[in-house]
Length: 435
Ligand SMILES: Cc1cc2nc3c(=O)[nH]c(=O)nc-3n(C[C@H](O)[C@H](O)[C@H](O)COP(=O)(O)OP(=O)(O)OC[C@H]3O[C@@H](n4cnc5c(N)ncnc54)[C@H](O)[C@@H]3O)c2cc1C
Image (cartoon, rainbow, N blue to C red; front, top):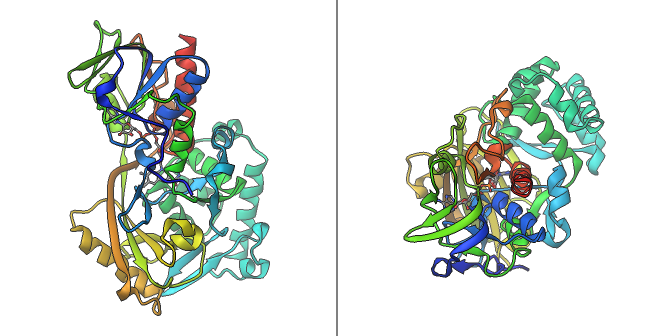
């Protein structure tokens, strides 16, 4: 199993170079993808990452008891087109979820199976939270999206995903008991107000390949990309405080007292930092936060390898799972790892918020000995994702900027996902190469 601390050799900031061809600010997935593409093209490219570790929102930490904890629950969707091209899924040793999900409602876990992926057709037909008409429409939507490319999706009017589903004739029952709770966990959006085009492209990707967790956690993905960047070209603990240059032209970066001159600078940071560092006008990004609690248990409360989504009004917890059922190596031998998530971040003590999640999970695992579970960690992420609202895609900034020498990357140029980060990194590399 890969060790999360076993990365391609990032160097700490004292060894910063004086001059580079391309400086990439931010060692999240987008910055690493950009740097890998440019270094493959023969450019002298260096990555400057503020934190001690690369990976940005896709980090995995090793807990002192040996658990591998993602910095927020993350799933790997192999059906994203750029992911499939750019990431070697084989070496990730992806541990797939069982298709479908469990819907937590009124004290019961109702299975939603996928008969096209090995689930029982009888169980699918018996699913009580959707009418036969809904099931038929779901199948129709899936088949239509399978036959369409992204351009076709983009040609449709963009509106709130919720209105789109209503427009397709889905019943309020299936919207409330499946679409909203399931996609709330994906988009961290409470009521499906996000762009219907984005919703459709994610729905299509979820259907196009297995969804899982790398055996060593989500951090294995940025580490795989970083491993193809030359040793010594990734600098961690190197927070960029400002850009160098004359007027609008950008001629490098400042890291504390140090200056690094660069022909081109790629800014691959979160939306909240990008406007401040670049001075560029950016659209308003509505941030979506999440709080994730990890627990360990001696015995798993279920053998299920499906995600549980909560469709119970008034419940704090949005989704939960027994992660070690899906990816056993995330827990030490003989131990089990569970995760529960709440939308948003709340001004509540970490231990108290974990009790709320434990309480919600206990309702669905009445024989799960939840009182014996031990809380491991709470992760609060106020800026986990941003809401790609209807019509917003047209207003997103492009890789090329009005400032000579400065190129933009980061999911902020595309969509708030792994796919968005990969595409943005590739587009930034193209913009650098074409300049
Ligand atoms: C909890 C959670 C769950 C998610 N789940 C999914 C999912 O299931 N599927 C999916 O597709 N997407 C998911 N996402 C979204 C996905 O992780 C992001 O879209 C993607 O990782 C963004 O990559 P990025 O490179 O654009 O930005 P980041 O990963 O945010 O990278 C930006 C980097 O810039 C660094 N930085 C910031 N300021 C400076 C500075 N001044 N100097 C130097 N470095 C700086 C940061 O430390 C960071 O490493 C999730 C995100 C979170 C947080």
